[in-house]
Image 1 (cartoon, rainbow, N blue to C red):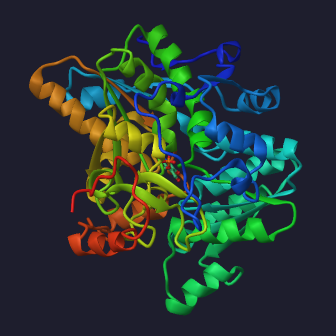
Image 2 (cartoon, rainbow, N blue to C red; image 1 turned 90 degrees about the vertical axis):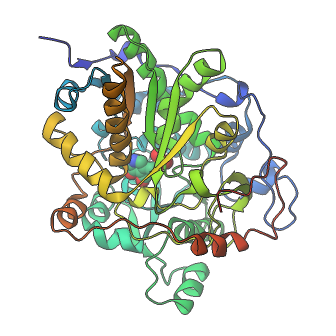
Image 3 (tube, rainbow, N blue to C red; image 1 turned 135 degrees about the vertical axis):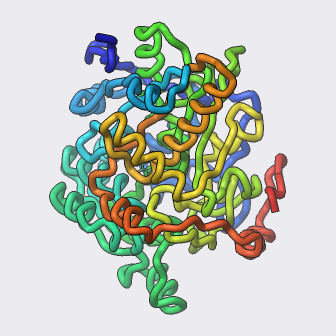
Length: 461
Ligand SMILES: Cc1ncc(COP(=O)(O)O)c(C=O)c1O
């Protein structure tokens, strides 16, 4: 019998995170203050984040030690197994070898606790008592809820209303871990009330929920805000995934020709691919593909510009691919991919041609998810299905070309709390949402007055 799963013993779990900022060919431009338009300093961020995380955000150290207190929690679910997808390969009749890193084995079911546990730890050390956050699909909110419980912190989650309604069990998971979760936009913040006054039926967006969570942090006592994606320190924490994967691929005796991940704010993709991007910078030939929904085509159609991370313009301006902070994506079921921006690190690596973005429509992603479930057994989160769809395309391309390619992808989470999305798919209620060019133009008009980065690109409009 051939080896299906490649495990790493706990003793082999990486003891340091990797920081690609030490190796990027083009250094990133700084975040700007939302009021003055000047580069933000650590003190500007201090009302929102603890100083130990701010230091990581701007660090250019290649390796960052993982604190013992974080390692002790990581071993609850890490190292995660790397699988060879033999059954999917057979079904597709492809000569390609397909590997997937199973991040769905964490208690909340995704990669999100890799950074949630680190952020809860650093906040605890800094004396924070309460953490506020936003969540889309609920994976991030539940991950942070669990990690706050582990460090005795209060947790307040603003969950995008459409996902709140699609996924009632995520709210209950957060409650089980002791967090308080409300639908966003809510009546609990100025930002939420303002949005609801204009549109009482607003389905919400990650940008809006971020505005609420940031406001709740800066107005709350001993409170800080935590973001589950986009920022540099989040990408750093997630690299434990790719570092493990490199060791596991070496055990398997293979090296990937193609690395694939879905990208909402960029964190699971970054976590798995950044150690391979480092190899690529140093001469390896790898095709590294980030996959996004065609209904929210941030990387493939959005300009590279300075933009706010949230709708109400409270966060610093980040240099990133963006569809504009007012962009409200179509109500697709991959709630974690409905974000207007992309991590500055991933955005810069796209500009430097180290990462290739692809957009895919919703129906193809569910078809891929069902194929994966029937062959490999696991039911994927709707976000993860985006990666699977492109894995299948690449495996079929390898068949056409008669090439024995090695394809690696990040299986970012299971979909066991997302079955309503599958139900809608089976009942024929899902559709593709091509994005009208007019919608992008309107959203982009909002960022027109903002400062432009040196490498400004107008996007595909
Ligand atoms: C399972 C899963 N995959 C992917 C994502 C996308 O986020 P990111 O791009 O930060 O990994 C999410 C976000 O909620 C998620 O829950």
